[in-house]
Length: 425
Image 1 (tube, rainbow, N blue to C red):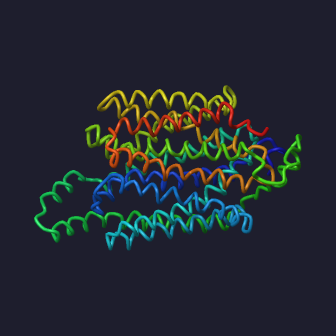
Image 2 (cartoon, one colour):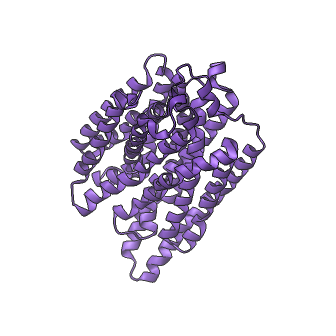
Image 3 (tube, helix red, strand yellow):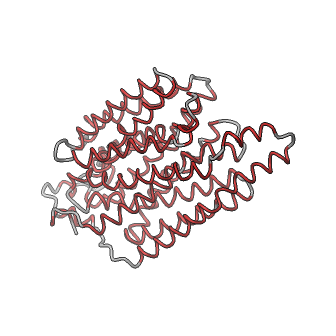
């Protein structure tokens, strides 16, 4: 089912990819709700401590991406997808003893295991999605899958926000009014038990879908065969993945891409609370950002590659990101909050453009190159901690800290869009 022979994208693997991207979105963007929820339920003192939720999730990509590529070479794309869903189910089940013991460390362990499953899933599904059709329209296919990803990202904060953060202000007031530790613990035990039903349900869903995938005929993509039909035959002269500088520049672009996505999607709730906006906006903050990302994906599906190239779309999105960040920092209240949410539009087409540009022309190195690109997702682990350190430890104003974190990231992505993706070609 090589794209070079048919020039078309097959429906069934595309549909499976969309379902998998929905799962990725659901687990990924649950972090936006888990950050404020676990801060209350585990009685954490600072936002910086709570940001280790995103750290545990995204740092797994850094450690597991290369091993994931080895696993995929051994067992193939489809078995890799099945294994990733089983790992996601295991990580979800760990939330149960974590809640029973009110253990933040155990929650982080479960989140890390989920991140490991997502690393394997991302390493498999992204090159698969890039190769099942013409490479020049890969950003369009990733945008379509991203539509499902961000739809899940809109649903999960609404669902989990309602389940976990319902009456959060009232609970906080009860904790402050508690006269002793035992009374406080009783309140927290009731609160944290809210995770039981959702995460047991998720574990069951993941296992059922894994079984479905195991017995579904899903054609393998032979990336080695892709190389043989490349008219330039450039890859035949390459002996190492390190001979593709645009790959490593692309991985760093993914690092900053995910960094700004997480800042706009997961940190927006904390940012909104600092702005003293309505509790409604704080509770469903991530959903607003993801709704804007959904709008951006629709634009990408329509425009790429018919009206604009992947590279041009990336440049425009980066410049819009810089503009909206600046406006959000130099305004206050609801206006500032809205422009952080609008960053979802700016961030939406970055991953769909960066990933295919990073792995373009790798041939037999596509699986390893994909893993190196996936390692860049660690940006989502590091950047919230950078923001938290600036805000909580260095006492930088929360809006200025946001500016200092976001602008350098966008500037590097702009460099990759203009020049970096051409390196070594």
